[in-house]
Image 1: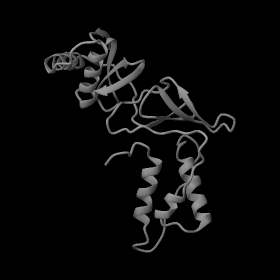
Image 2 (image 1 turned 60 degrees about the vertical axis):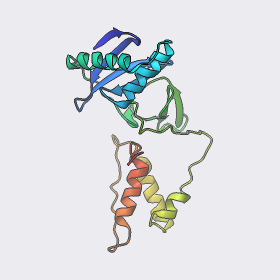
Image 3 (image 1 turned 120 degrees about the horizontal axis):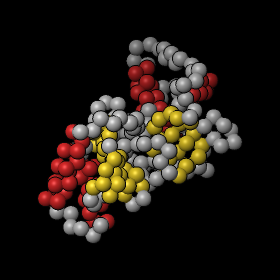
Image 4 (image 1 turned 180 degrees about the horizontal axis):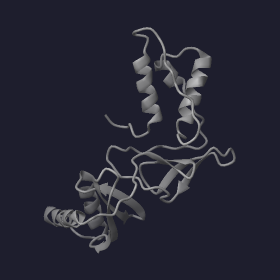
Length: 205
């Protein structure tokens, strides 16, 4: 549902796949999507009032939040929204956490990994999503990972690395990872490490 609301101007409310109500607007030329209600929404209203040279009083902020809650009751529109990463057009898009840039990863060797400008995919803003310091000229270094992951064989490390990279493209053929070992050998610990690295949404516990 699109509408005009001061101090935001043109904005939108929609449901996500879980039925949560989301508020979308543009702040400082960056599209923001936050839950209704949430601390992020409170902060967003405050920042917008300041941007419009209005005093962000509690009564004014709560008045806007109440209006958004009332509008959200009527919403039936549904849209797909992600937190940290998602697949689209055979590419992996990663939310950098701030600004209007996203990281796009393709299997095309020519393009490879790119930092693309603009919101190609809708990501929800959250205080739990930190900013990713993406540096395109920095090569991956897994030394720290292998320091704590109980995998010492170089061949096994290569297989595991290939599995983790390929897992970023779930719509294609992919290998199945089988972790074996004696009790206490670190199978569960290794699995948790893989999930923390592979699942970029796991940034807060």
